Image 1 (spheres, rainbow, N blue to C red):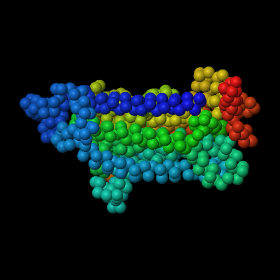
Image 2: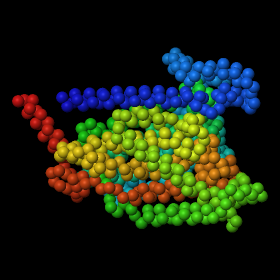
Image 3: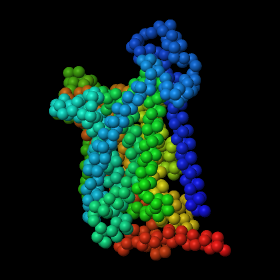
Length: 627
């Protein structure tokens, strides 16, 4: 009966997740279909300008375009007609070019898929390089404390568009090793894949590097080391134990490599799907935009299902039987002197830059001092308008860090709450993760106008998905651990379970993920501001400094090095601070022996209290059936 009940429960869960995916996909496509009518400009005017760049069309021309496209019929008629043509392979025609949409989207998706596979290979290699030392030391029982994650933080904080510009300049122009633009063959994929894969690999590798020490402190690892298993065998199983908690982060990474790679595709002139979707959104060309969004939704759903199947295969039967060992908390001596010195150094440098910048005027324009190198008068140099970069860096620090922290906090809390509702959030997370932040910014701006808080709301609308995926995965693993089953058998209530076990298990990894993504949030906000959807000039902001000065990176590299270095310092400070964050200790105490789980020097017996209670309960049910 238990197996039948478990199978029916799993079937209901899959049906609920499938219905959630369909409902979320229809909702996203419906909102996208409203873009031309939500916009504060006449869609006929936008389409006509995209066709002929005519800045002053006549009312007769606008009326002709409106009649041609049937804009007076409203968004729902267009949405229904587009959906009705999909089963026969008809995705409509472009409002701007008049060509069929499906061949355009298919070609762009093929390019993006090829680029995504190359970037994923770079992501895996970078992740492996970051956590290789932890694997080697942990397998030999030489891992004394958690690593600071400084290398991962520095690489993850690299702006992708800035890294793409540097790679195109160095590898394509100076050295001539690879093409600096276009899409002509496999060689054209190398530089864009590096620009996309290095920061993403640092993000995944940093999270995995922080999760591995807990796996090496589990009882089975101590037992295998004492028995004499080879270090490579222990390392493989520790990786298998830690990887399921990090795998959900691949979903937003995969989607970002396809739909969010707009800046990289523009720099390298790659005709990908993200660039096609952005151009269609800016021109309010609805059929290509809807078809590209549907492609991203299907890609995200397929990637989510594949990642979920892979994660369950790695965890194996203990996930279904409730026999996963609980990850032990970090040791008390996890905060070392080196980590404290790194955090203090980053904080002092940032504080000095901010204080020195606040004493200067960020808006003073001096055309005679354009693009001056660093010197006594201007310690960080000047930009293309002769404005002091130190002043703009200092005045933009509080606004940049404040908005990014608020967005990160709101997204993390939303993701944490939805993670406790896996049946509701599974399909919703996969679908919303496919929506690029730029498209969300266009939708919010169309309804509320451009502003910094509008951009923040747009990022929050899609930025909760990595945290929800991580929280749902950790919540499922924690509920399947043996000490949870033992605690429930002893009569613990939901509030006790939430306060003493579930929240402590989820808070620390979620905090590390949030702080590691903090520079990424800054750059996403900057990209929206660069497109005119967020912070408006001349307000100083770090991401905008990078965007504005990117064209001068070759002529005056100091204009981009200063804000990039500030972002790296902020990222390292955030990661080292999160590693030193005090964790609420979970007293995973055995109901039989009274010893804390995983803290004794002798290996624990595989016959856990949870299995004891399940075995006793099964015998009682068997006796009842026999009688």
